[in-house]
Length: 386
Ligand code: CAA
Image (cartoon, rainbow, N blue to C red):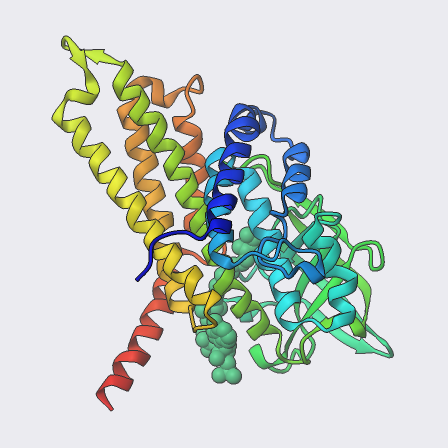
């Protein structure tokens, strides 16, 4: 097993780290406080090729691999968790399914501007009444002539306010469960839909989370992504990749929380010595450092599996499960190390706790990751017994 990064992967790491250090970290607290979309940062992500990291250059992307994507996601999220999720959704949940399931017309028309960052994407699967039970959705897409007519409401849409292209998953045959679901590219200019409630959230406040309202919205049939009835598989395989991005986001948040806690432990004194010299604090820091590295190894394994064309769904679920729960633990300890200062907004520790929390929920809760892992492990177990 080779742990060394290639020259390109190293270059991606250094580019992302330098952007995070110089542009994201200095602005992250203000982005959180004002809840404003980090437009300047997203523009720079586009210039760096970070909105289409693993998309071929032919289609406007940077042409790097999925390991590079995971590396960049960690660094960007270390700088600003809100910018991280905007990047993750555009790459994993929007570019990726068009790259995998789109035809050349769709790639030229949508993948290219999305990967170049000239347009921004969102992904609409969940609904007010269905989240973990994704196939329980009620939004319909009924064929009428050359168009599908969309009716329903989608919920928890990252970048819902700013995005102008939406990957929509809906029932084209409501009499079937998952086999009646299809996927669509909905272009907001061509098929205007409504932006519903804009959520007031605990964290990642710079990224908008909205509902989308479809009231007899007509979408040309040529915008269907993949065959009719294939939409659930499009969504599931898209989320397999998305979970690598969110795992890397969780890792980036944990890293900055750890780095700040370590620095604080070297500055703060109590009982005549710096607190970093107390065993209780050193043990916390040791556990944090170990868990951060363990998460990175799981994430890199899933990303390399994706690059190799392997079935990486179980590994991405493991990476997402572990990294998100690890991030919550690390941020909790980082706040604890800061004592009372951790609980107030003068320091960043409380923000990291708030930002990390969502990574245990979106793109599949921890409970869903365990279900995916258990099912895949059971299959492997059954096979090994036969
Ligand atoms: N890849 C391809 N196909 C898959 C698949 C995968 N990873 N997982 C399942 N499928 C296929 C199955 O093979 C099956 O196909 P057949 O009928 O042909 O055999 C079909 O899909 C149905 O599979 P299941 O019976 O396993 O489906 P289920 O109803 O039991 O659901 C689930 C499975 C894993 C619970 C799924 O519903 C799930 O992942 N739920 C969580 C949804 C989720 O992550 N939502 C996040 C929303 S995105 C977001 O957060 C937005 C944001 O902006 C950040």
